Length: 447
Image (cartoon, rainbow, N blue to C red; front, side, top):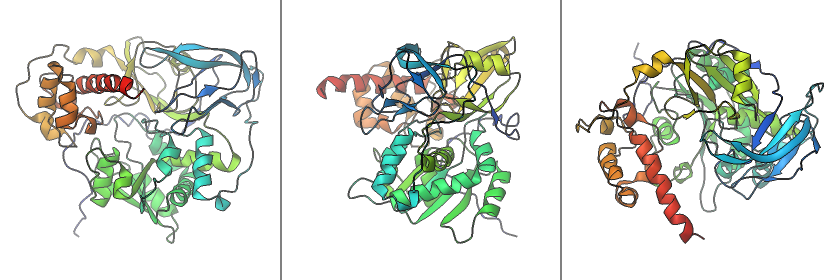
């Protein structure tokens, strides 16, 4: 029998998966911390504006901050309790940023009391976009871009295909794996919402072929008449990146500086869609999410439903840390952030908490060596950049040239170049700095 070639994109890397510890563990609910820290900026765009005051009682699910503009989302109380203060709190980047701190009532049942009803079938696409913004939903795959903005198809553009991204290509992470097995009905309903909002005719659920149980389960549950199909794609990093998944599934190439809508596609993480189906009919807001808590430094690895705003300190009190734990990463090890404080809270974009031990961290070389022009970074880059050349320019601080002539902004910081570099050059960190400095220079010109 001739086997069909599994769809994929060019280049990329194959890091160890490290998913076995949690991929077969059902989602469990984590308790409520004594204090929940809700940052006002948990998304790309403008921060939310607080609409509560110190000492005010709030119920679980109640809006506590309004969006700061169209590219912004509201925040909701993750627990019934009292607003302890509105102050600055530490973030994953180490900076202090405005946040609303809530003390949950110890005796509360924590039932979601702020709720209503909505008839999605009767909504226009514009009403759906507004309702999605009201949920506070952002991309739960890690990017944290406001979902309603992606669903609002710009004037003059059209979308013919919605892609539900179930690749979960980052090592260690298994939240989407479990969600697709345990909440498939919500996923299908969420896809229907995205189809109506964008006007697309069909949807594809893209899943890496290291999840055969998910592929088989979703195909078995799908109604043959539904405009949805499941497509396996090759297990490779960064298969779950928007541009790479579009290329793999549809053979369409998003132009340099462009967006998926430029090739008539809308891409949404599977967890994002499933949560919309859960929240929108009840007019609820996003107050919790599934997080994979794993790594050799964790005593009780698993997939946990965590209230937003839960500090890492409380999480590790529940799941346990091994004595040789040395590094905590929020997200996946390729694109995630290493954090130094246990006071950092879980936010909407945190899909994983990975704890590495002294053995893993000691195995990494610390010294940076000169570039040997081996070309491995060029071979690995999924968007065909020249990381070696751009790294040289970054060291010479030619940041504007990197952007103007060498497509710096096409880099989505997947870290493939850093992963394969035999000289241990932190290329992706150089590119992040270059982008940040270019943005700073442009800011005064924009007022």
